[in-house]
Length: 441
Image (cartoon, rainbow, N blue to C red; front, side):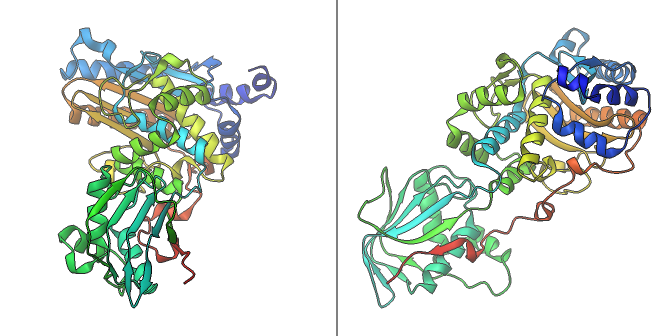
């Protein structure tokens, strides 16, 4: 904190509070240098507090929240080291899919943004005249986004290697998951179908239609059954090494669609929800009690996070992302840019990077938005009650009201602009070049 004060950064923020805006570059410097979760000064302007008070009053007026249940609503607004508003902000509340912020942070710190999970394909037999005499063995390295297109491309790779029939079983080992189905028996059955276009059902046909024109239809007929083994056969010969999409794209798709299966798989890969909980609190520099998890996805009201901790984790993610030459916008949806997933039905200010959370009795929203008079404003809103759809509308109105008073930023800071152009487009599933042929026969 002394280093921060001595560097003059606090004075920059206090000048901003007096509506003396500094260049956007200064905001970017602050984004990287402040300690996540650090608050050293309250906002001398009442804008944040007044806006939150009006928001809470509106919830009571519309009867979304009875006046005696206002304590169930948690809000935290922060600009750099300056606290703008706090209502139950340090109280851990059921946060639903805001839990995925913690999972994103720990996965990024553990593996790195460019990490690719590997799926190995091997056999115990020999290839003769297009027939593989033996089992086809799949050993998963944890890829949470192995989908129809990936399996179709894998089948095409096996065809190119001369394999058109397997006189044996499809043996699945490791934690193989396909189409977000974590049951390896079910996933293996889907893989067997995907590699044989003659057996395709409607989901496989539809996924194939999304692939580039001219993509071959694989014909790998497996005559045996799907078997699940705990360990791969040490005597197998490796045929193909399949690489997943890079982790940054996996995290982004998880957050765009708030996919629970991806989140749980990533949490399992880093050591489980207890590891996610402890590591996220440590990296975000918040008290351990403000992050309480029972899984990595947010399913269940026993996943509790304080609004302050949600903001601190997003700041920590921004810092970790910058060190890996990406930004928060490469990991989460941006309103006004993304048109998919949890963006539907929302009306947030443009350029807001956000994560939603929803359960039957929980509606949560956390993120960061650029403003002219306060630079980057980090926010977390956690509502409890029965009007989930209405809560979403009121959350958006709160942000719009705040932006109206703080004014729209003339320039979107580089710190929340996608660094990777690929982040703005759909991920490219089914790329044959991500299948490395190992067979030397």
